[in-house]
Amino acid sequence: MGRTKTLPQQGVEQVKLAVFSCSNYPAGYFNAYQLAAQSDDWDAVLHLGDYIYEYGTGGYATERAAKIGRALPEDSDGELYSLTDYRKRYALYRTDTGLQALHATAPFIAVWDDHEISNDTWKAGAQNHGEDEGDFFARRAAAVQAYYEWLPIRPPMGEHNPQIYRSFHFGDLLDLHMLDTRVIGRDRQLDFKSYLDSDGGFDGRAFGAALADPNRTLLGQPQLQWLQETLAASTGHWQLLGQQVLMGKMLLPVEMMTGFYRGGSPDLTAELIGLKAASLQGKPISDSQRARIEQVVPYNLDAWDGYAVEREAVYEQVKGLGKNLVVVAGDTHNAWYSQLKDAKGDMVGVEFATPSVTSPGMETYLKMDEAAAAEMAAGMPVLVDELQYCNLHQRGYMALTFHRDGVQAEWKYVDNIDSAEFVEVARHSVTHQLA
Ligand SMILES: [Fe+2]
Image (cartoon, rainbow, N blue to C red):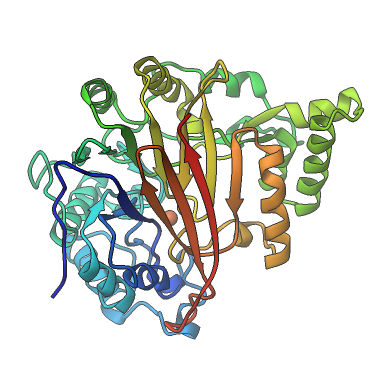
């Protein structure tokens, strides 16, 4: 038994949403879902994808599974390919009591990201789909069918069509547009490594030219056109984009990026943060030091940063229409708050990104302990111009509360995912007030 809620038509003074992404069963217990289920006043839960992961035992983030009692069971311990495989994985995930509790508490509005199909999916393939793994589109069709069977979604174009972009209206306060940045339109991701030579050089000219290609698309032309027409016709006080990948610019110094691909170094990051801070404070730094912090490249080419021309088109339209834009994102496993700025530097909206429910984040990629991750998180907004806040090591979810004069984002973190026993351990809140 559970409770749901219909969309309100009028007299809406507040909309409260719980936002999630990246729930990975073998990585831990879904305590973030359980925590949100303790509140009973959600208008809806937004799930931004990676509701399941496709890997088998031995795959990504399964290392601790046996130790914490989250091993994949025998009937679902391989990588997912067939309809039966995907169905069994959803059935397994639904045994988690936190997920059960949240589904019973509030209606879900969901979109998929890549792992509902396979890692780094694009419109005709995926990073985790090799030539020896069968027909990609057959696999995708199986994944899509299982998704439609298990998630509360009415596919707008029918159950055999993978088109899921659609809008929801919360009275005249909020229009929510759920997007698919993953499956139907996305051109293949650029690969930073292919612009590095063997002795550490970076071909910035070729990389820049590839990035500036006006034909590269994330949404695909039909979805982009739908979004532009929908935004133009929308009358809601707020326009909210519910989607998968970060839209804000996450531009990092080139040497930090080449460092990442050669093993990473928190010390280098700290050094660059120090230089940027000195520069912002007007302290003297040398030309070569300035070059180190001003030569920047996108951190993640799987995000909107890899499709910058299309992002700018969305920004220009929002700015021209004078809409109050809020974007939510998942995918990174960490929490982020950015001010979205167009190429001229004008602010066109804000982005709030939710941490993962269980998937490991930056702390794991960079092998940082809690103190080092907290220190890096404190410095990142200095280094990254649009970034205002981030959390690089804690799991949880994000509550969004819309009022007419502002929107509040509150990140809520749990103390552990190693057992179903947990407490809320930290919160961070920001309010974006309309002028
Ligand atoms: Fe994920």
